[in-house]
Image (cartoon, rainbow over all chains, first blue to last red):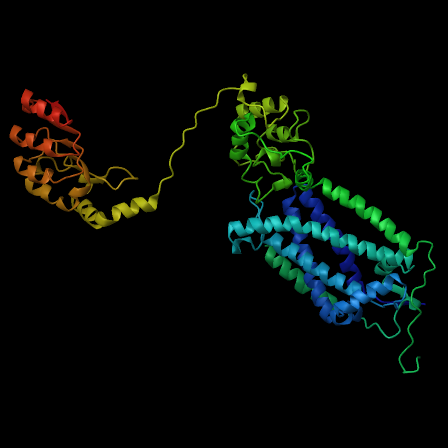
Length: 215
Length: 321
């Protein structure tokens, strides 16, 4: 029997985020700075959306649901390779921290991008609020932090495929369909899906902010 | 339901997969190593530093008297280094030294060989081209600069060869540069007399001017006022006499009475008193002005004795008909 664990908003967020990171990389690699800026502001909208959704969204998307003490997450990781961890309905304790780290690093990437310039006429949306020297420093950091994003993505993929290949718990499929086999969920964790118009409100707010900063 | 009334948890994961934890993490390790190698391949500077630290390779740098340092580096410094330096590294490329040039940047191609040299290719593109370097709108190198880089690359892109090894290279162009103007210093130098100068300029128009935009020294010219410019009027400029370096009183109405004023102009270098009522006796007094270099007077006033006295004082005396 299948139950819904990931709502449409969370799933769309996840896959659009993947696409968005790829687009941001592709556009800068091919010197398409205007499109890169759009990709960056889209990323900002996504991150703001996820933060709002983490407060008022469905139970599996809420921060209060998946943020545990770091020691719990570490213990979970150790027990996980010993196959002695229970199933989680939403994010497991380690996965929860992965979400937070991702949001922080991507958030830094977006903000540093908005503070940077390319010396060829492009200035990020917030670059006028800092000195040229500071903007140059953020341009450097913006470039450097991409290596951290790659590293985090790699760790994320290693963890996900550990579940898919070793634990036979197909998290990728679940992130597409939103459904999980009831045997692979936690009985004590009941899913409460938030109304979809909540997601539209969050999206409206986040897109408005990103657009306002863009224009 | 459990005994405590809580819903029972499903069984934890079972190790039933063909891919065991060990096998999986071994695979991850292999992939991570491949990824790490690819990552390090993009960081040649790290590898170079490591090799130098272990004394496996000599320190990578160009000799001070090398052709690169003398002729190539100034080109990169002028047109490229603003964006390809330690602080910016556009395209992960630095062109602020021979060492950094060797690390190539994002392209990971060898930029010190002539064949298919990406640097040369990008610098050879038309200025408007999307991939041209320096980018459109930036100060651009000359064809001579490009030829010089090509010549250097043709001989191996070395940091050791000196100018002697490049006899065919055109001689180094002389560089003329100007000191930047320190406007604040000029304003500061003008400040003590600024009010007086402004007042006199309002009163007598173009009679009083600064010697140049960059100078605090003054020029007094009676031309606009003509023969109405007399001894009395000259004293009106007493407040600025310490800054007067040129005074042109040609065909004005001044007489020997103005000598008292002129002899107190300690910075005066050039004086034109032709067509005035100044006598030979008055003229002779000017030799005591230490700063004076040139005096224009009526030819009739120049006698051999006057001439001799001015020569003795190293002042050029010019006779005007």
